[in-house]
Every structure is written in structure tokens, then in C-alpha cells.
Image (cartoon, rainbow, N blue to C red):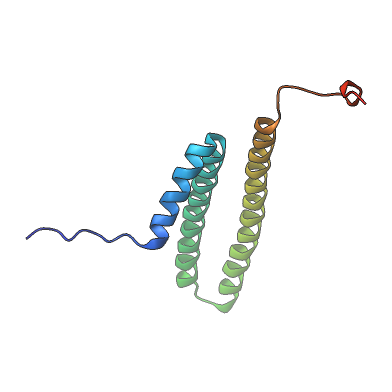
Length: 117
């Protein structure tokens, strides 16, 4: 029996169209977008791993004090991780903005005194 073809959703089509438009219009924007997406995926993967490790540690706890300790360590680590990720994303977006502004500038500079009155 032939495999059924997966129907694409409007959201998937919209993402593909947006990506194609960014590539055609501004390769630097597409590069920045790809960098943001890969960084987000990397962070998500690491945090999910941390969540699983915390679950294992919680399941191994024998006393309420151990539970409190594991939860405390987990939340403190999570706060540090999310803060560092926000800073990383800010640096990526700032770099992309600087790159876009650099590309937007023209190669000519005009002075106010070169316009005849």
C-alpha cells in the first residue's frame, strides 16, 4: 500500500514562505534567523536534559529534606541558565541589528554645505 502524503499545514507553509522571503531579500537576516533558531534548539535540548536529571534525582530522594535540596538546586541552576540564555540571545540579536544597519548604510556621505541654496 502506498504511503499517504503528509498534508502541510498553513503554519508550516507560512514558515517556509517567510524563510524563502528572508533568503531572497536579505541573506544576513536569514543567517541571523538560523543562528537564533539553532541557539534556541540547543538551549531547549540542554534544559530538557536538566529536567530529566532533576526528575531522576527527585525520584531517588528518601526524605523531604532531600526533595527540598534537589528542588532548590534545580531552580537555582534554571535561573542561571535562563539568564545566560537571555544574554546570549540579546548578543545574537544585537549583532544581527548591527549587521543590518551596516548593510543599510550607503557608501556616500553628504554634507549639508553641498546643497545649493
